Amino acid sequence: MSKRRRSRKKTQGTEPAIKPITIVTQHRAFLPGLALLAILFAWITFDARLSLIGDNAEFITLGRSIAQGHGLTYINTVEALPATKYPFGFPLVLAVIHLIFPFSLPAMKIFVAATFILSIPTIYVVVARLISPGYALASAGFTLISIYALNFGSIVLSEVPYMLLSLVAIWRVHLASEKDDLRSHGLAILSLMAAYYVRSIGISLVAATVVYLFLKEKRKWAGIYAIVCVLLALPWQIRTQLAGGPSYVRTWLLSADPYTLQGTLGFSGLLNRIAQNLYLYATKELPRVFWPSHYDLQYAGGPLDSGWVSGVLGMALALGVLVFVVRGLRDRQLLALYLLFYAGVCMLWPEVWASVRLLIPVIPLLVPGVLHSLGSLVTRLAGGNRWSGVIALVFAGLYAFSNGSAIARHVDYVTRQPPAFENYLAAGDWIKRNTPEDAVICCRKAYLMFVASNRRTTSYLFTNDHTSLLQDLEEKQVDHVVVDHLSSSTGRYLVPAINANRGRFESLHIVPKPDTYVLKFK
Image (cartoon, rainbow, N blue to C red; front, side, top):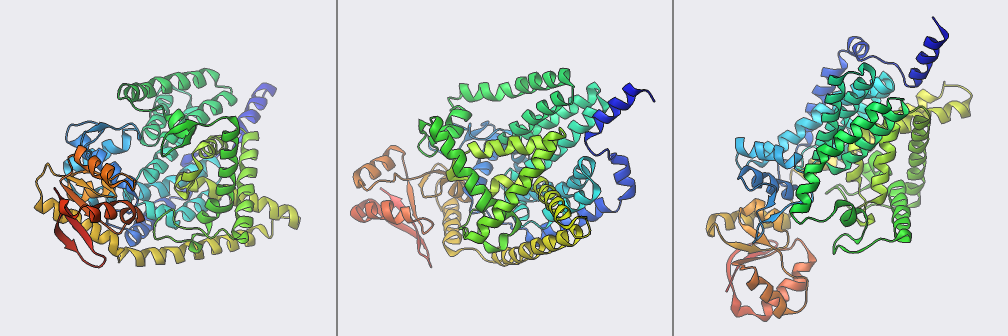
C-alpha cells in the first residue's frame, strides 16, 4: 500500500469505522427486541387525554386548520390569523390524521407514540455506526426508560417526532459522506429539511452538517448543502414575511421580553441570557434528565428541587458532556458539532423558557457523552479500565431506579385527571353540544377550549379596569364566558369584573367541585 493511500486511510479513520451491515448481522436481535420493548413502555405510559401543555392544543388547532382548507391559520380566533410561530411540517401531518380520523385526539397521540417506538432501534443503529455497539445499546436503553421521552411520546408535540427525524438525518449524512454520490447527498438534504420543517431548531443540525462536510474536506458538498438548504427554507421565510409574521431571530432569540415582544437585547443583555441559561441547564435541567424522580412530573416543566446536591451533580454531568463534545470536535465528528450548535440555540433561547423539553430530542446523544467521559475519568483515576464497567453499572442502576420511580408516578397520574382541568374540558364539551357553531367563548386557555368545544375562543384582558375588560369582550363579540379554576388570573381579573356587572352575565351551566361556570354575556 502506498504512503498516500495509508495517509488517506488514516485521515478518514478519525471516527469509529463500524459498518451498518456488521451491526445488523451481529446484533440482529437487538433491533426488533428494542422495538418490542418500546411498544411495551409506550403502552404502559400512554396518556389518551389532552395535555395540560397548551402548545399541544395549538398544534391540533393548526392541523385542523390545514385539513379544513384554511392553511396554517389560527382558526380558533375571532378573526382568523396566519400562524408563523411553528413551521408547517408537524401540523401538516396532523392535518392528514384529522382527515382520516376526524377530531380524533387518540389517533394523533398514537402517531407521536409511533415515532417514539421507531426512535429506539434508530438510536441503536445511529450510535453504533458513529461510536460503538456498546454505547448504542446504552443510549437506546436509557432513552427507552426516560420518563420525559415516554411522557412526550404521547403528547401532540413535535419534540419526539423531531428526535426521530434528526437521528435519521444524521444517519443519512454519514451514509452520504461515505458513498459520496448524488442520490445519497440528495436524501441527506431532504432528511435535514424534514427535521427543520418539523422543528425550527433543526437549523442547528443543518449548520453542523455544513461545518462537518467542510472539515471532512468535502468543501464542494458543504457549499451545495448550504445553498440548497437555504433555498428550501426560503419559501417558509417568504411566507412568514408576507403573512406579517415577526422575524424568528428578532422575536424569539433577541427579544428582551418574549411575552410582550418589546425591546431587543443588547450585547450585555445577550451575555446575561447566555450565563443564565448555562446555569439553569447545567444545575437544573440536565440533572432532571438523569434523575427525574426528584422532580414533580405532574407535567413537564414542574417545580424543581434546586438544592446543592442537584447543582453539583448537574455540573458534573455538564462537564462530562463538554468533554465529549471537545473530543468529538477534535476528531471532526458530526455528533459533537450537532450538540455544540444545538446547545448554542438553547443558550440564546429566552431563559424564562429554559426547560427539559428542549433536551428531549438530544437525550440519545447526551447519554453516550456522559458515559464516555465517566469511563475515561474512572480509567485514568484507577490506572486501568477494570473499574469503568462497575461505575457504569452503578450509574445505569441509579438512572433506571430514578426513571422507574418517575414512570410509576406517571402511570398513577394517567389514571386520574386534575379536577379543575377535568371540569374545564367538561365545560367545553357542554358548550359544543349546547351553543351555536358561530359562538365566541372567552376563557383562560383559549387553545384548549377550542379543541374541547370546537368554538372560536379568546382570552380576557389582564386588567383591573372592569370597563376596559368588558369593552374588550364586546369588541371581540363574545357570547359566552367560562369561569375556571385553572389559573389565579381568572379570580384576579375576570371574576371581579363579572361581580361588578352582574346584570350582564347569566349562568347557563355549572360543573361542580371545583365549580366551573359557563355564563352568557349580554
